[in-house]
Image (tube, rainbow, N blue to C red; front, side, top):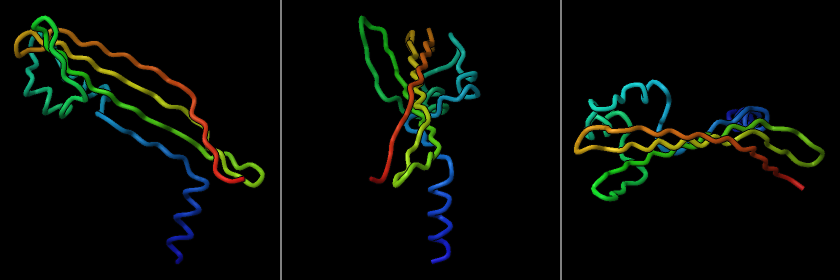
Length: 117
């Protein structure tokens, strides 16, 4: 019972950070070198891509990451969470077995949610 009370306390007053998809932090991305990094090495660094596509003989692997961060904001008879959602998309273009090009795009949007009356 005591652990449930502490869990509930930290859930209500603590911040939340949830990541889904590939881990696309800068340390991992710095390991990828155009003309040198192979498909097998990409799989070791990032795991399986979210999507694979081939167009005109050019293969593309797409990795997607989403990080949602929120902090509680107590309001009368309800609890709201506010923060942001950061999306990161990595597209790797291959020439045969080696990385030909790397494209990274990022976006951020607000996150709002509430629980209660």
